[in-house]
Image 1 (cartoon, rainbow, N blue to C red):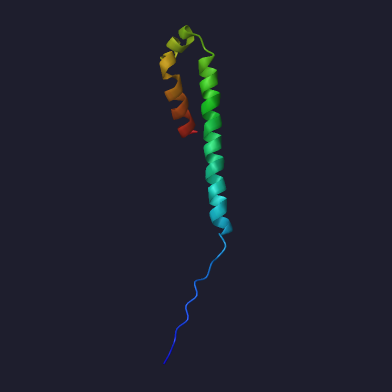
Image 2: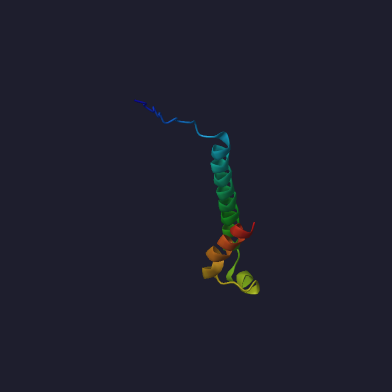
Length: 71
C-alpha cells in the first residue's frame, strides 16, 4: 500500500507584491495632494475670477478631482 503525504507550503509575501501596494498608496496620496491643492487654489478665487475661467463655485470640487486624475 502506498501513501502520499501532501503538506501545503506557506510562502512569505513577495517583496514585489508589497512594493506594488506601497506604490499604489503613494500614487493615491499624490493624487489627493493635487486634488487638495487645486481645490484650495480655486476656492480662494472670487466669484468674478471663477466666472472668467468659466467655472462656478459648485464646480470646484469636480474640477479638482478631474485635475488629480489627469496629473
